[in-house]
Image (cartoon, rainbow, N blue to C red; front, side):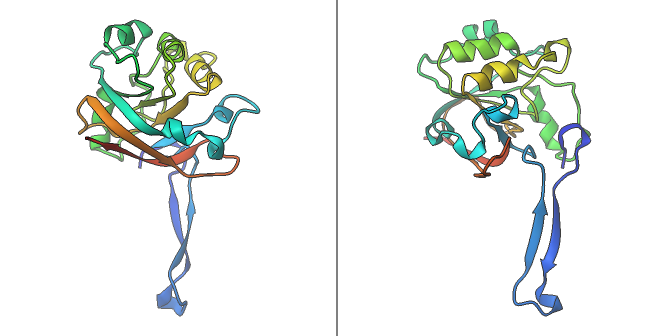
Length: 200
């Protein structure tokens, strides 16, 4: 699978096997806590911040809006203002051209992506958003805007949960119920997650 910057992918190593006389099959799983679809808790960029097991469940589960963004530039606060996001929306997932990359889950990692810029992060804080998701392995712009990681710092500093690596290629923009279930990793600076959208 595609991983951030070519980091090692997950490995599944046999520990016990029935074929070798063991009573059950058991394997060891090794992976980064930022593998695939995953959440970023504050500790990822903020020393002393909350860790994965401390993320608020009420931010991870509830009504959600998927926004369709067809621009080539990074998502901005100005665009979010024009997008007519419902005033009570507290969970936003942003579908961009990145989603098409997941048609090949083994595609070569790229920094040529659409991300969320600092003005959009500030917009989310000002609007009381609690969770923001994006359809690639980082929410941070990869050009000059990346200096100092302002998007991560702004969102995580406000306690907003970041979800990265979403596969939204077959999801239409609109309103859903979100269930984001990260692994409850004690002390984790990230956590792989199963994320479900339910259409009511």
